[in-house]
Amino acid sequence: MAVEEEDSFITKDGTVDYHGNPANKNETGTWKACPYILGNECCERLAYYGMSSNLVRYFEHQLHQETATASKNNSNWSGTCYITPLIGAFLADAYLGRFWTIALFSIIYVIGMTFLTMTASISGLKPTCYGKENCHATDTQSAVCFVALYLIALGTGGIKPCVSSYGADQFDDNDEVEKKYKASFFNWFYFSINIGALIASSVLVYIQDNVGWGWGFGIPAVAMAIAVVTFFSGSRLYRNQKPGGSPLTRIVQVLVASFRKYKVPVPEDKSLLYETTDAESAIKGSRKLDHTEDLRFFDKAAVEVQEDHIKSSANPWRLCTVTQVEELKAIIRLLPIWATGIIFSTVYSQMSNYFVLQGERMDTSLGSFKIPPASLSIFDTLSVIFWVPIYDRIIVPLARKFTGQKNGLTPLQRMGIGLFISIFSMISAGVLELIRLKIVERQNYFEPDNMPMPIFWQVPQYFLVGCAEVFVFIGQLEFFYEEAPDAMRSLCSALSLTTVALGSYLSSLLVTIVTDVTTKNGKHGWLPDNLNYGHLDYFFWLLAILSVLNLKAFLVISKWYTYKRPMGTLK
Image (cartoon, rainbow, N blue to C red; front, side, top):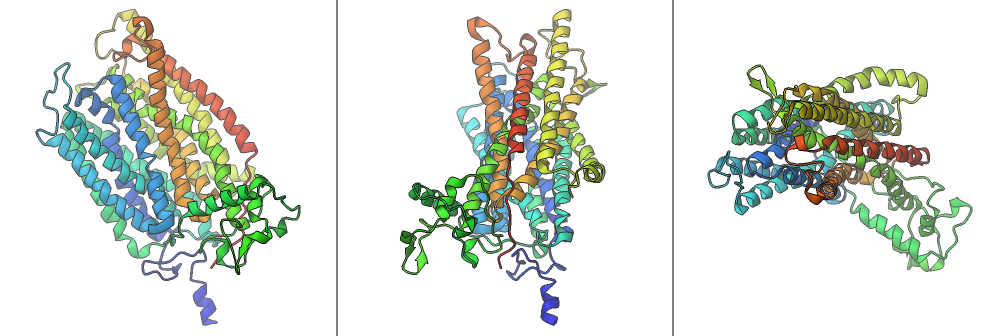
């Protein structure tokens, strides 16, 4: 009886505590541990956005890069920040676990932030020709700056895919009471991100534009150090999933076994497919997966033939379990949904690119105060902060009455709504630019840096992007965590983040193509250095059209999506 009572306090999802013992529900996890994770994320995002929100202006005004070059460099760096999560995710799932991966890459992150602060503060490492035309940073100065930036990209990449999954790990999937709080965690996780972003896009952007870049980068470096301390402070309260070895090996084994047996027929009775009853079927702490009917070619890997058994054990490169096969199927099913996030991320990336450059050509004065154009992203952040509690406390209960879903909307429904809203953000930006250019032409404001059109006209486009974020990005977090194989959750979280990278790269590619095509025969083109001579509105219309096509593709893909079918927990 005492043993049964003790077992009732132990988590059933395979998590362990700081000492490696089975995690006690009463002493670890849930909302007891989450404040440290959310606090860490808030400070880390303050550091990241405090440095990245205004980076395009740093390139343009401190390194003296041309507008298109600054935009492309910013997009490429931002994209890299969302590719490097694949490295951190692989190490977390396979070898280090999420806790130690976050710890290791946080140190790299702090080093990069410190180095960047030095490049903006120390004479010789920073450009000394402020305010002069045709004056560029030296190759050495640029190189040192970019080394620091790409150290930061590596550091943030190791952290990004792990923190959201690590927070979700604090809730036991096999405990119905705890499980229902997981979707709420993702909402508040994104809320904490935007609290950090709010401070960054207001206070820190102002400091960078009016006090100096040394202070503007130094404060984010301190914030990142605080993030590390906050994370370690909760060590004894965390639940940890043990790393289960390389998940990529299991995937490759299925691919190899399937192609080896491409001529072997799959039996109609799927119960004849190979599966074991012990832990060989899945990584410890991970659930087995039931068979699904699609992607049947890969079922060949689980068909037993005489050659599969060497001595007394099965050759894993010839014979795989149903669970292994279903893990690969789950990853393949995620890919089309994943791809539809790229266009949205291209739209999202405009906030740190052409929204800022558009704002530079507007009236940034508020009385005697000059508003930094990059600080308008505060309205994106305020939009998120506004919509997260509205969604969590009002929309979910209302939607639950109509849909019967415990979370109100499925993650796919949530993402679809966000993609729809994002179309209007580009329409809003395009209409504003159309009006702005008409005023420029009518009143001959081509040469002045700005014009008597208040920058606050940009607020609707920022607010709409923020609203779309709440639906798309949080929906992605939940969807990729729930639909990923249990032992590949960090990897799949990283996969979802790569859409932001590819969106940034696509933005850079579109800028290159549009510039090359529209500047032929000596024309200014759509995106000249002086946007008053260009047609930025055409670029926004292009993104709106791509967003409409992307939404149509998403609706078709979502209709045919097959959800994974977990069968329980291995112990």
